[in-house]
Image (cartoon, each protein chain N blue to C red):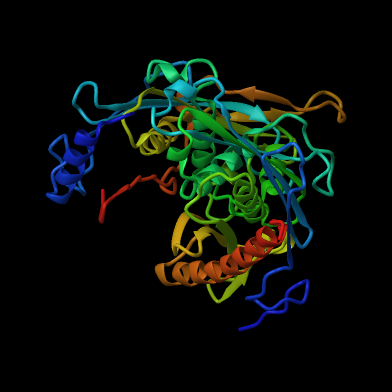
Length: 232
Length: 243
């Protein structure tokens, strides 16, 4: 059932995605991702000396630290706060969990890999864009990973019949329920599923399948960008 | 908490045989002990303990304080609710200072979401989450459909004043399922809460802001209907099994 969407997409169509790596010269790895009008820049530093508390981590594993900040000019409303708030800290934890399933921390014991992301413009699906950017940046930095992590959101408005892939900002606000899936496409494993709203088992399954198809597209875009960045 | 490989095998092997370290089966919940009214200086409070084996319990206290605040712009007759969670250093020395801040923030936001039913933007939109933080008062969520408490009973003066319920949790000991314990304690604290009766008395001039009179009589307090407040249950997967 196709419902006309604001930007003319079909229900199962993703927004155009653009990925470029190597955008921050001093970082070990970096990536810039655009999901239509949502723009995220990510830089990865490390493995490097661990910050405070590194000796509290298990002796045979390294630490993955994720820090995400929404730029003060990212939304069309009033200027945002400069300091990182609770929402951004929670967002960072979510991205961290999505990446933890893939990053092989046993390859850099007693050191830290820092992932810093800045959301430059927010127009829906910032979580998906951030996870994609972080995956690409980690890969470019040479951090050992089991697979690239891609993420995509399926949103439901007006009940389970209206499942929309990759909701834009307006669609997100109107959605009654949403599920964001962080998926490792080649491995066929999900590293994180975040669902909000009311779902029944079947419609949640459908939404996750839809999100997985979106993840496959993101994965393809990431691989294409990473391949083209390797000098021939 | 680091465990040795031998301990890991012991636990996993036990799970396969439906026998966990404390003798429970895979689907058994620990014994729950609830005490109400443990913080007399708050509007309502509860202390919840999961488990009875000393040293292996999860112990939390949630206190609810009702304050006067400003109502949300999109619902001027509604009240507000906020949650905060502090992980005390008693639970783990790592939580001293700012150590437990990230985890505390996550727990608090999870509780807040379960109470307000906020689904706008789900979790994918950082901009909406941050915007939700910047309300008329700091750190207030939007109230979506299916909100746990009927917020419309907490308005005082339309568009001007309302009850602001602040639920503050303290984690005293942590032995797993902390979010479960916090959600039980929040529900009980809200059930225990007594909201004083407040009347707005107009000033002598028509332009004077109305004064709010609080009725001191404890019998005149109203209670909250917590039948819609959800409880959170944590499950983990060990091998092929779910605990």
